[in-house]
Amino acid sequence: MSNHEKARGLLLKNVRSEAGARVLYLATRFFIPPFVLAHIGMQAYGLYGTLFILVAYIGISTVGFSSAYIKYVAEFAAGNRHDEANSLLSAGIFLTTPVTLVVFGIFALCWNRVAASMHVPAALAHDARFLAFSIVGSFLMCLGLSAYRDALSGLQRIATVQRIWICSFTVESALIFLLVGRGWGLRGMGIAFVARSVIDLGFSAVVAVRTIPWLCVSPRMVNRQAIRRLLSFGSVVQVSSLLAIFLNTVERVIATPLCGLSAAGLLDISTRLPYMALSIPGSFVGATLPSVSHLRGHEGTEEEKHSSVRHVYLTCTRYMNAISGSMLGFIALVSVPVLAFWLKKVPEGAPLLMAAFAVCSQFHLMTGPGTAMVKGIGRPRMEFHYSLANVLMLCITVPLSRLLFGSWSATSVGLGVASATILSAIYFISVANRLLNIRPMEFLRHSVWPGVLPYAAILLTMLPMRLVAVPEGRFLLFFWLALRFTLFAAVLAILWWMLALTSAEKEGVRNRFTWLGARKPLPIEASTASV
Image (cartoon, rainbow, N blue to C red; front, top):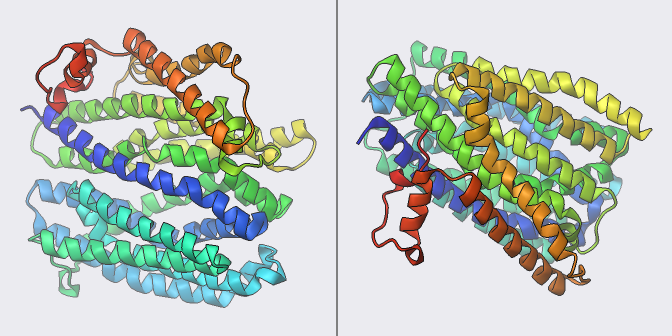
């Protein structure tokens, strides 16, 4: 079996594991927002979402190490350099733990000022403090001790990591429904997040220690070379991650001081379903970094390594864009009935915002394999081509959107941010393609085209669906959406078969569905596209 086939088979195995876990996560996240909104209101929900933005910025102090753990553990394990892997993990844990303690102390001292800047209502002051300390403390604890989970990811034991994650968010979801339903409000949300963090961290550490025979974390393993690797690679990723967090939350960062917590809550609701949909095709991104790093750690010529990385990149972008287009295209073009079923009462401005964020999320997701690829080949600075371009476009599109709408609002901010994301994503994808010697038409035909066809399928189904009026009430609306999606899926399958699938992919489909005439199951490698 060639390196291409081995890499592709392991990649798709990891993708299946991660995608399955994300489907379950998406299911729990679908029901939580309307339940929480009904019990605590838009303002408190906006506070909850804003606190996670704050946590993300606080956690940037150590987040760069996570990518370094995954990259170097994958490389060192491929080359049987276990002592170097242990030194790196040990250095990370004993460097980040004291840093997170200091950061938490600073946060505790500054909380009153932070609460004042967020305009926290007096009625929510005590609950907000409890929630903030619970979330920040748990998050920093996980950052300081995430080396065990990242070591499992670096060894491409994605299925194990995802099983632990499923356990943690299932407990969190159950506690949210139980505690918030009993009137605990924001305090219940905080307790649920603590439980999720403890389970994720504790189980990851136990599994890593018991299943990785060479793993040894100790202060004696720390050396200058390991620290230098962490700081050189991690610091670049850290700055890039800071920009990424800002860009992923910029609409709420801008809207909260200008428009209030309710506007932040509206933006959170509008982005929730598109971001949830991203979690399934996003599993390709999570599997790309360890896969590329593992390929780079193997012996072989640079030309062979380049060819393997190029193959993984094109495989990821093709299938990821096809899956994301089928989900996000549906959300974008039927946003009103989707929101009516999800929330019962559709907030003003939410359908337009959700459609815009669905489209821009598909463009953003297509940059994922590129950003993972440049990290895997040891060139993380190339991520700045995306983040800095996005910041530059924000400086143009957000003020322009404010000018067009005449005032600051959730809609003007959201549409400005979505436009900037689309334009900067197109630029970064072109940069990544040039690095891998991928011609524009090759990429459009191979990776972009499968993600465009879902929009055509939605448009083709609009006329027949006009014969069926959109009903009122969640029960009937559910069946209307199910009928619409079934018709959409059938048309999309025909379009994919006729216009997108390669001969190898068609053969794979025939062999997987016995009613099309196949008798023998096809190995996973044969079902993927030839690049």
